[in-house]
Length: 194
Image 1 (cartoon, rainbow, N blue to C red):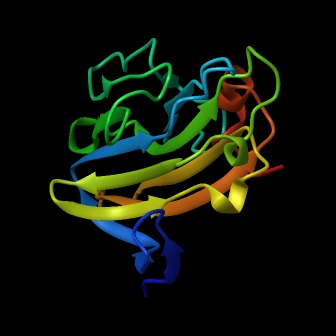
Image 2 (spheres, rainbow, N blue to C red):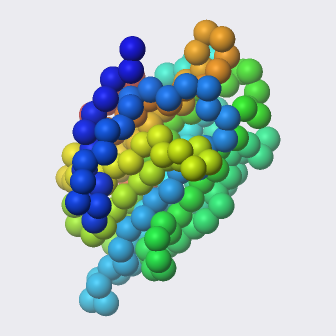
Image 3 (cartoon, one colour):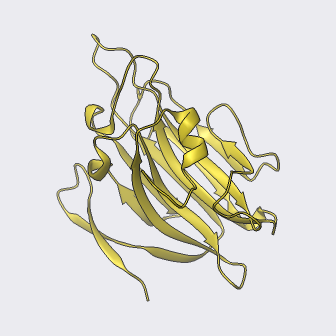
């Protein structure tokens, strides 16, 4: 049975119903947006991150982490667009996950967003116009504006899990963390959330 949650999307003026489970996914794209800092502030640098987990330890330590400065060893998870400032129109950063090409030894992939803390603490609530969407071709699977984790410096967005038939499914997983991106990468896939 599919669960539903109402999500408010910034600038849309309407509610969207987002299903908590999407099945039989093959190739998805995660897109992130945020507005640049004002001229009197240092740049706001947000990053999409993905961590992969093995069949043997789906909630253990990640096998590898993908972010702006890395890619998956097999080329199945890649950053296709990156920004350190949020400048530009539309979505500033994008990551492509080719789930159907991931080896059977992977059981789970967690996607999140971390905010770089090099200029002091910065939370989602202090960055304007934040938003993330996950799409498969032209189908929107998830949309969120981080309002529910406004006081956090990092947040998971979703997890992709193999079902018993080997197909990938998406579960929404908006959870806030008080970590910098390096520490967040080690925490984001654990069972216990802060």
